[in-house]
Amino acid sequence: MTMTLNNTPPSSTLGLPVAVISDYQHLVFDSSLDLDRAWALGIFYLKVPEGLDLNSAREFGRELAHAGSTYRNIPKYGDFEGFIALENNQQTKLALRRHRWDQHYPKAIAEFGRQLDDIGVIVISEVLRQAGIPESCWSQASGGYSSGGGTAFLNFVHYDTTHPDQGLRPHTDYGFVTILDVTKPGLQVEVEGAFIEVPVKPGHLAIHFGEALNFITRYSLRQVGAVVHRVVSQKSEDPVRHGIVYFANPALDGLVGQFNEHGELKGSSSVNDLFARLESELTEYR
Ligand SMILES: [Fe+2]
Image 1 (spheres, rainbow, N blue to C red):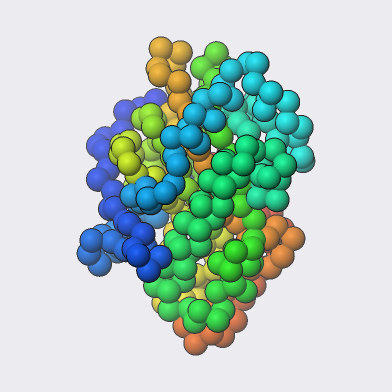
Image 2 (tube, rainbow, N blue to C red):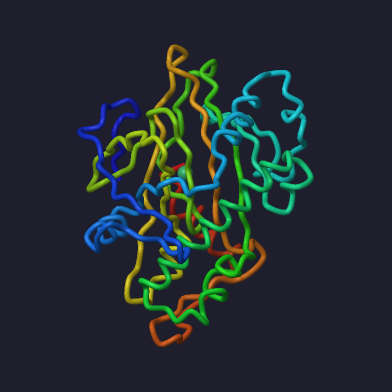
């Protein structure tokens, strides 16, 4: 596909549908039209649930931007975990999978991550419910994620403006669901071929759908799509852009399954193979 230039102003801004988490721990929209729109776009706002201490998590993220922060000494584990400064974009981040949170994050931050786990499970449960997939199949479909397993990343990102590059190139996320706390403008999503700004909405998180969710709903009553998104280049005169990013994923060494509404398994893939396929198919977005 043709990419617009990274700094092209978006043609308009996007009024995203808003969901809340109900007392029954369900994802609820104002109307079914709002849900339809969220599912069609692959992105929506979620009102920050009571008891989620976003301010402390933001404060922790801001500390990481200081060169002297000891958290910058956290070692790398493979390509995706640890303190990472990438060459091909402005992101500097501390990224850790769930099983390392207690070791490396302060207690309150590890707890914050587990609260995001709960939100992730609520979101994926609603997607699978809307898809008509029987609940008994959810855990197998999601590589354990919907039942509290799977893989989750809790990442703290900031944009290093001494590095005059693109913010984050257009891409889709590979996993199920991404939970974003964004406090500064710059995030854009592709809608009908054009990039549209996602306005910052105080008191709300942005939730978007990834490729693995698209994969597991393929034979269901309601397939969802992964949203293409980017972050425009941040300038040194801009306020420092911080973000908290949570990725809900299947167990990376496991399987994901494609069930239909009768609970019949129509297809499956190892997560390794699925992500490798996405990597080769989606290189235009990297
Ligand atoms: Fe992303």
